[in-house]
Structure formats: C-alpha cells, structure tokens
Image (cartoon, rainbow, N blue to C red; front, top):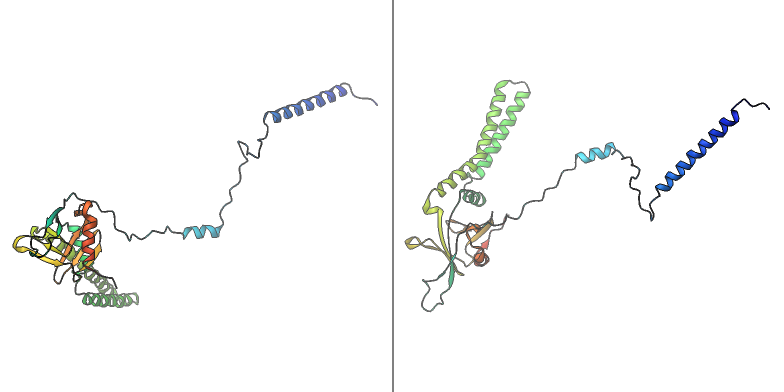
Length: 266
C-alpha cells in the first residue's frame, strides 16, 4: 500500500510522546505515595455537607435553652463586721455562765425590702386587693368587648382606665415596701442592730432597750436571700449572714436554727 510521505514518522512521534507522558504520570505517582497504616491523606476529598431537611429546621427553631432554677442563694460575702465573744452576765449564781457571740451591723434598704416582701407584712389587705383586681379586670373585659362590638370610643376609654387601675392596685405593695424599707434604714435606732446570740436565747439591743428572743422553739424563722428572718410575736428581726464573721458563722447558724421553728411554705 502507498503511505503518504511522513506518515510513519508522525505516528512514531505520537507514540513516543504518549509513552513519555505515561512515564511522567507514573513517576509523579511514585513521588506521592499513599499513607500507610490506613492513615488519611493530608488533603482528603471534601465531603459535601448535607443540608438539613425542612422538618429539622422547624424543630431547631422551637428548641430553647433550658435555664436552671436558682434555688440556692448567692455565696455570702462578708462585709468585715467582727464578732466578739461575750459572757452571759445575767445568769443566776447557780447557773453556769454561757458564752455567746455578739454581732453589730446596719441594715441595708435592699435587705429590708426583701424581708418585707418575704414576710408579707406590706400586703394591701390581701383578699381585698385580689378582689379589686378581679373586679377591674372583669370591667376592662366588658368595656373592650363593647368597644369591639361597635359601641364607640367611650367603652375603649373606660377599658383602658380599668386596666390602669388594676395595675396601680398590683403595684401599690411594691411601692409600699420600697418606701418602708427606706424609712427604716434612715432611722438609726432601727437600722443599727446589736445582738448577742447564746445557745438558749438572743439578746437584742443594749441598756434599757434590751429584750430577748428565747431559743426554745417558740420563735419562727425563714431563710431568704442570705438572711435569717426571725418572727416573734410582734416583731421581725433580720440577721444578714454577710454581717457574721466566717469563723463563727457555722456556730451562729447552728444556735439560731436549732432554737427556732422553720416556717414551711404551704
């Protein structure tokens, strides 16, 4: 057969070039050996991330972080008040003199406010306030219903007034506690407290103003906001733990808690 001029030379060149290319690829593969022992290569192939389904996205929207309830009080920070040991000078001759712990501190407005709130001493006639709020809420509902039924602007006005009055009745206890707490702390005779804690009693005040709280189970107590609230027949005594020196805090708490009755919430 007749071959065109130069056809054999071209085919030999193309075969030679193909062989050289194959050899170059083989040499490159030898320069980059696969990792031994099942190790992954330095640049593993990227995996395509799967898009979350529509249902998963909906479920994710309704997942809210769960916040744990803060049942425990914050750590007590000592304010530097020093406690002193005192002897029971009023003990009878035949009685053994007991050693007590003397504390002196000044009440703070926030402590008094929380104590009044916990004890319920500033509630506005309890049942009366609840009845007033319910009546105003019913009136507001009636007025709003009349307004949306097409009665007119007067019904809307009286509905807003009813809601405002209900809010005032609800806020009055807060304002009363705030006012009373400030008044107590502005009175040095009440805000400045001195007590001597013995295993069988707590002696309040000094001089002619002394009075006692027996630790025989007749006094009730509450523990709230790092305070011990003592309920006597006609008084409320606040003992903030920040005023108790850490070295004697456990002993003070032991004497007070063992001699008083805890108020259990209903």
